[in-house]
Image (cartoon, rainbow, N blue to C red; front, side, top):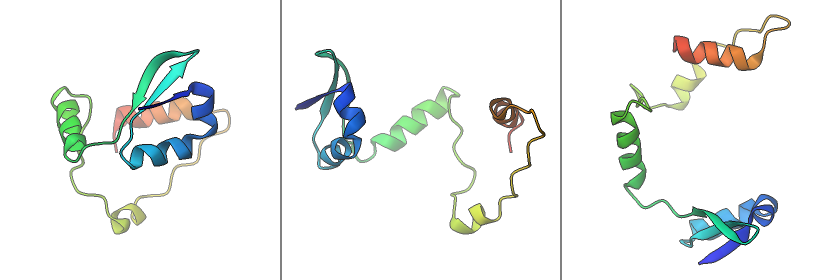
Length: 98
């Protein structure tokens, strides 16, 4: 298993992702101490993770599968009033849903 420092990972993320895509796991270290692991996603694992998040109320599965046509039909974003915080606008939109 390869290890990489945080600074190396930041500078070479694409190369790290290529290794992971090829099936390798990479340990990320902070001053020589392991702090994280990047691993390839195993087939079926992603849907299991989404199911788990959904059961705990932390994610909501889409009602319909997104398609290019569906995405092209979304309304244009509303312009922000001068002085409005983008962060607050996003949080308000999340609370209100689509």
